[in-house]
Length: 114
Image 1 (cartoon, rainbow, N blue to C red):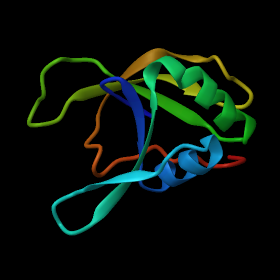
Image 2: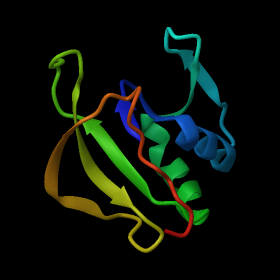
Image 3: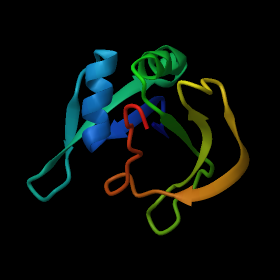
Image 4: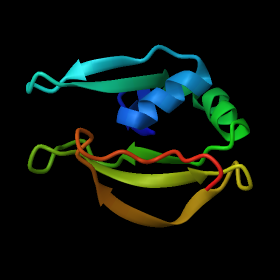
């Protein structure tokens, strides 16, 4: 789940899964090519409630936070700061990994039972 402003957002197939498991609205965004990318998001202040639902359903979730205020080549720098699994529901990432994501192209796959 990517922190974008006041929400944690998911995209594509992840958004479809999160929408179904968490019973939230599946929406979308036009990407300018006539294609619509599925989106599902939850308010940042309610993330623990939705994480619990995803974990209870057997999913693994990576929490990705924005770590800078300025875009580099049009992209915001983001960092995975927490990985949540059914066996480790509160585990923070011990070693920070600097990752840049283009949210239109990259998603974290939530896979059941993996």
